[in-house]
Amino acid sequence: MLIVCALAIAGMIVASITSHNGVAIALGITAAVAVMCLMLVTAVAGPEAFGRVQPIDERAAADLERRVQALVAGGADETEVRSLVRAVRRISRQG
Image 1 (tube, helix red, strand yellow):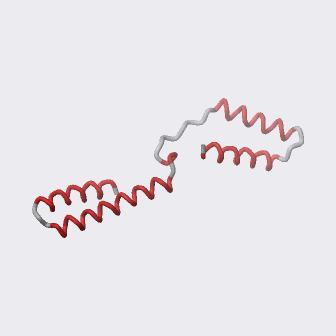
Image 2 (cartoon, rainbow, N blue to C red; image 1 turned 60 degrees about the horizontal axis):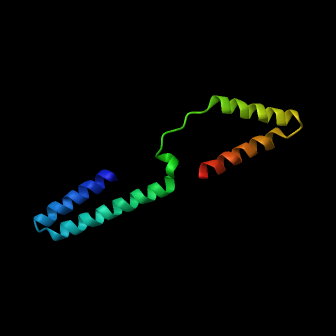
Image 3 (cartoon, rainbow, N blue to C red; image 1 turned 90 degrees about the vertical axis):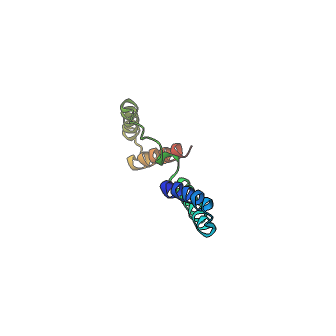
């Protein structure tokens, strides 16, 4: 979409210089649609889609697993504890 937008803008300039107003308007509309598509993709994908993937901190993961095992050994339901961990991860990704 970015290439389409750039080409449409370049085409608008060329069409305007050569007095092809209809072509310039059509390319302007094409550029506007391409920009709207880019905005939509950015809004739907979210910021994590455009960043690099963070490496897993193995020490923190091991500590978390140790804590989950301790809670389960203490009588907590393992399914509920792991569900809670997933919920916290979802919340932390939003912030």
